Image (tube, rainbow, N blue to C red; front, side, top):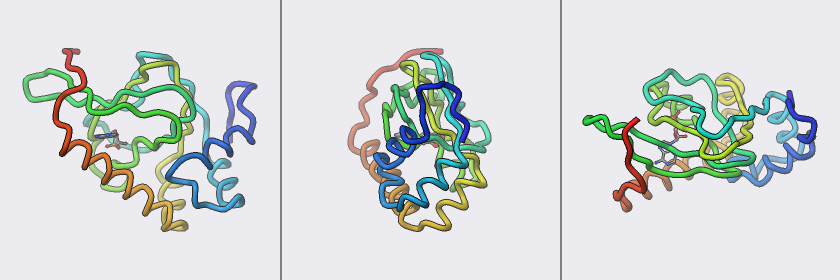
Length: 158
Ligand code: CMP
């Protein structure tokens, strides 16, 4: 694991992984293996983490901060479909479906993210079906939220 700020210790990272719904069922040894293949990225407010339509080669767990999930409509307007915070996984869909990124994800505040590359992500979910089940549950809850709350939280042109 690469930590690019001195105040992120390996213990901090493990604690955050443990609090993520996606990794909470893993034992300490497996969590340490996940932390070992992860790097911490610090993303300033306003920066994009990923762009809608791009190829996905990494997923992230939010450690600190807040992210906006934005989608572009055919008329060019941009809709905020959700916000993500600590413990949430993001960028998992393209790694599972091999399809382009479904949304743009942008830091709403300065944020710290744990980056997991595509091949490590695939190894983790193949070795830990319970993690894959939690990811599936998360994606289904997001889908359910989209189905039942179609009102845009905000809309702007970019
Ligand atoms: P992916 O499609 O790889 O890239 C964009 C990411 O945004 C996607 O994975 C999800 O992690 C996230 N995402 C897409 N739609 C939603 C949503 N409705 N709620 C929360 N996160 C989402």
